[in-house]
Image 1 (cartoon, rainbow, N blue to C red):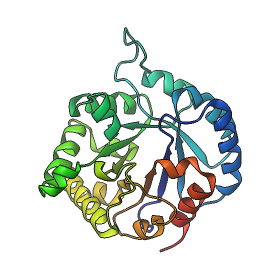
Image 2: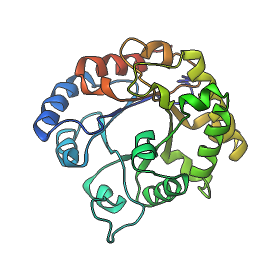
Image 3: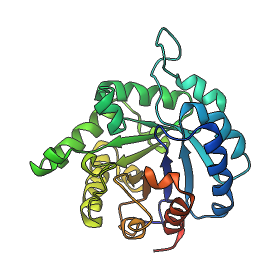
Image 4: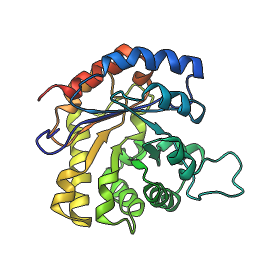
Length: 257
């Protein structure tokens, strides 16, 4: 990461884990380990835990994010949560376009674009997830896939709004599988993402946009991955559910490279 330009960002994606009681315990144990770190720290929790997380993290260095939102403000969308509801609660971030949402809930690039626009219009910061499958990587079309996802997701998004968007590169083949892209592989794609932002917007935006790696980053490989020039942190899955592992990753992002 280039700390002279960009501040590292570590986000924990709890996915569908933790009851309210579990969340209380985890957050209370995490708070003392996150003080005065040289990185932004976010926990993206299930909807049922948002209020608990927001209340417990007041006056701390931890920010709270949701894992999804709808693109409409209200309506007959049973089971969905709107960006208005999230913003009113005090949520700061929302993950949009996670590969599991694309795979299991058939989210499209068009839907993701609508969600980004809606989230930003209600003062939410977006963690936009993009990445290729194992089949696509083996066909050597990673850049084609990532470029297409990025361009469609950012369609008609104004350059000024990029300050509220974090990009998470998550190779689908490395999520929850124990497999991880090598630091060089991960950085090469993050570098390509940055070059795509340059083409779509400007050099300033390319230099300033935060790009996380989101494919099974853990306490053992975090330092190596984050040391790469174009990787600005991580979107952490399983390791964010363990206080000791998550704090190691936060420390890795806070250590000057």
